Image 1 (cartoon, helix red, strand yellow):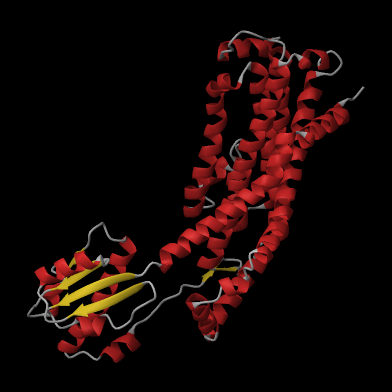
Image 2 (tube, rainbow, N blue to C red; image 1 turned 180 degrees about the horizontal axis):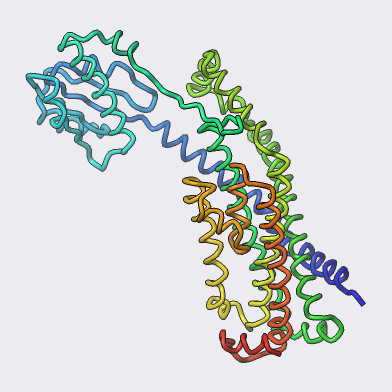
Length: 439
């Protein structure tokens, strides 16, 4: 008799009725929202902190450079004050820092002689911003001193945007390349996290049943392979249910918390940045870029991406889940699993790195193609390659290899499972597990 549906149902109900599962299902979204609010609060707190930078200018160029101030950074040009006195005053008033521009005979002499004094190490972005302001203005002054017309120089600047097109006439761009890579990275990261979280859940479930000796009763009437598959499918359904609930609860909690605390999301987005965005939207070039972005999104093979994402996501998770189940059956406690986890984690980590670096550089290169066919790395690497245009036959072959490997892995894992779940008090080794495969 096929007990698989009953085992799947039992595993699913055991997981979703578990108190810790229920608590984490509903508490995790709240924790994520609170962390998001805390990060946003700390970021705004840091942005709202006013930084006063005093400037001692002996060169006479500061008035032309530091003409603009922001709510976060204010520049104060000191006059009739020498450097020593300025350093003392700035330190006593606890201002952010002091910028010193010495007297020079020519603009070029300021390249290595500008100094910034501060109590602590200054922000790298602030220093970069100061350097950019000074470089830009002094370059313009240098042009004028050499008799160049700045307006004509700006008009003479040429910006090249290379239009990309395949031999078949398909147009691409740097933007589309970024979108394609972004899809692959998100898909790979989701699969990676799903495998780690719920694969460990399957392994712990088997260890708990093994140590409580419940497994001895169950195995007397159920085939090991059916029991293992039931645990994998049941836990997978519980994980999907938890993920869907997280999405729903996050949306509901966001709305409730916004209403409770009187937070208007539209108002939060208002401010200088929003005004800049609104002003930029009036620019025809920006509107054209937005239109290009939408066209690039619509030009992606969305149906192909969705279908293959589901197939590779399911196949990859089932493949690694069977390995987690075999490890859970082989050991008596979670501490002993560490020696067997590395062979599982290495292909996953390798897939992420190969996908992130090799696919970015050459999605159709030899390395990317080889790893997109290896079942233990194909769920990540092939998903990253598909947006760049992978022949359908390659996708089908990769999927077939993935599910075929899953079936073979289940067969091997079930042999380990069959022996391992009844073994107690002995720490397993790779040599011992190899013997189990022959039984």
